[in-house]
Image (tube, rainbow, N blue to C red; front, side):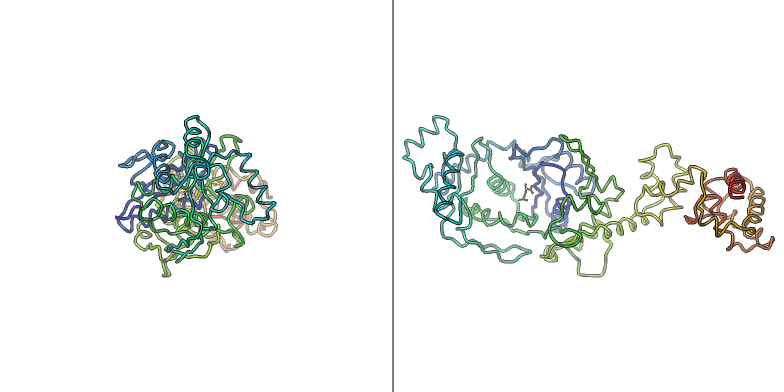
Length: 501
Ligand code: GLU
């Protein structure tokens, strides 16, 4: 039974890359008929940010990632928040001590500093607490047993460190990166339990993945350097390590380096799924959702940032992704974050939404809009927009008569023919009853009337549009007229004739 987990730390809003990690875990779990867990890794209390956990839950929900077990859902391995599991971890660290695989270290911050200085003077490259230096430090390997016991009984501060072997080749096969081989001499004696009794990320992560029976660890490439240490820990405990799959980095649009917050500011795009207000600075970071991206588009976009089905198909619903997903089609190379692709997906998913669905979306931001008008605006604009809110913002002339007219268009199109046409159109329109004021009827009335008056409709339509909207370009004019209604159309023609002369 496949069991995967998403294990974010609530240190701020979830980055869009984190959403991709969660998505790949979810797709794999569903594809394999397995389970998706959510574990909150909040052992670093100094980096805890209020609201971040709720944000993570909301973001996952918004994109449609369903958690089977874990924080917010419950399950057989509860609690799923590591801070609430605190008492569990110590016994594992102590187990390693009793087996000679870890030790207590009492060194103070000053003593650690001194060690660094000594090593610097001795020109030792690898300045860390490790198999070479540990014997010169204050720990349970160097101090007499009685002193160790006395210090602990006395309440002296200590940490528990892993005794990383001096010479050992650590190898594991990553599903995406293939064999990874690292020498243990490059790893320092990592702290497993901190002086406040909290486990470090490494200890808590391994213990929990083991206890929660995680079979596959799918996470970002930034965790690849920690993986050899994790392999060592599994070995030390005598536990079977899960399979690892380290996902490719998300790169800047230019492809040089990791995608950062700054790139979003420079390129004018969000890098967080939802809007986030920093609880300390009150600064607001924009979100895909609030910018008008549909979750379907975000999912499709993220799925392709590092994965490819190997076919020509580009549009995938969540179910189709689940069907096609496999870890072996994930790329090794970083994926460039091209926001235009996200916009392109958004246009597609807007077009594929029903009018009533889109009407409901635009009404969220403009509650006073009647249902009827919302639906009409949707049919007017649906094929022309990238974001739902543009259905409203792109047509200000629907809500207000133009107060100015595009000068360029007026200069080239407002001529004698146009003036004559306004009279003809006004009269034709006036003859349609309110109930019959539909785009089709308007069209079928205006065009023959112009023809009968000897005016080529094609030559005056832009002037007519100018009179109605104030600009030379826009959505379907006949439908625009229908939405405005007969009285408004007549009033705008009259107003334009006065204003444009
Ligand atoms: N808590 C880590 C994070 O914030 C989890 C890394 C992992 O998946 O092992 O990303």
